[in-house]
Length: 302
Ligand code: FE
Image (cartoon, rainbow, N blue to C red; front, side, top):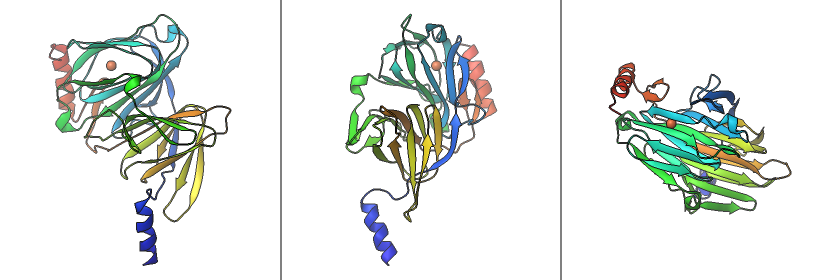
């Protein structure tokens, strides 16, 4: 009786189980496109995928030689790519006549669906290029959907300030009353760029059962796990650490004790729990569908 009373009391406020850290993964240096140097964090031997997330690349360099070759024409089918630019400019152009420049702070959420062929090329000769590309799977029923873009400049990404020393750019999902502009019912993603002053705390609801990770790209943070019985512990994460989070219904973070603010992306989504057949830029459910993707691409049906 008393337990029940306590539970319903806390259910009215915030959720009760703060997710901890299941494992910490470091990215692997690699190159892609025509020789762009990047760090692959999801989609490498240590972390092949995290359903529904197939890949996470961080690119960040002041050296034009690392990015200038760009990503010339290449296809995608069966999933979504999310490009979040922090610094630098990238021109995007596809075979359906869609073209645009991704500027600092902008997001391009591309649903490749049944197929696009595109290029992603730096729109600068020098200076810093920094950002992320995340691949999110589509369910079988949506893999052959028409290609679609959700593109937002930095001025259209709302900022939430849920507490002292906390600033959150809401790309997808909701922080308090602030909703991100992206809609994707299939995986219901949360994608937040969280800036934390030293010691500042941020608590975010993340539905139970969703896959979730935190990736630190500046400074350091602690993941504060808390169970329904009041137990707590903290796991420190450094720059370039990705933490796969345990089960729970919220995430609690605290800014590290560095001189300046720390920044992370907090990403979560509903797992699809479907078979995955993937090869390079094609992600389908079966080998037959993969072969079909190759045939369609080679015969110009994208
Ligand atoms: Fe691409």
